[in-house]
Length: 236
Image (cartoon, rainbow, N blue to C red; front, side, top):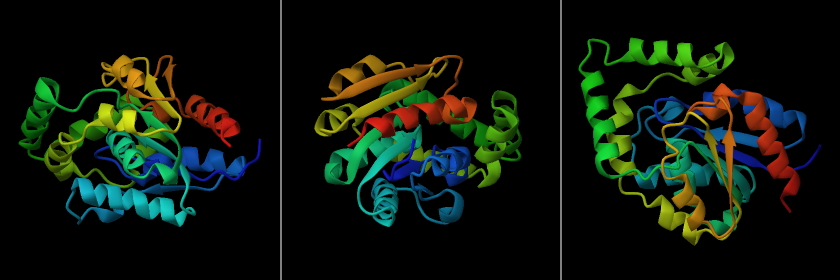
């Protein structure tokens, strides 16, 4: 299948644009231009402060670089900000793929996650060994390399989670009129509210990837690429 629909990728927290290397390589084979951006506090922007406005600006810069209208694909942290961007700029988003982010980032769940992140940061290496070990254990070798290649910005956790707590993904999904695909790994802990997220979408689809974890594009790269291929084939 060949085509020209541009695809913009947005990474998860404590990662960088490098996590999308396999997807970009597979898309290039089918003729779709693609770009993965770094969010503030990550990768090439590791010295920038993470805020909602700065994260949305990074996505907007990526959309502009690809011509102004994109299939927007975000995972985890990147998924939440992709949802927010699509609601704010629907004219620039042909379609939205929100992976690993079907969980309302508020309440006791988020509070526990932030508490755990602060606890891990008290370790002598701020949790670097624990994070890299888990990535290498839970992901295939190439996926782990991609996840870690852009660095592990552990210091961005608190600011990133604090900012994300102000987002309203369910409301944003209701505001975005274009097609939405919620893509979750079967073993993803962030799919707790997927039915509520799906119900909010005017034009929504839910895809659960068997035997995949939270980092679904890294855990099952070929299946994730096949999902994108089907989505791209059906876009105008």
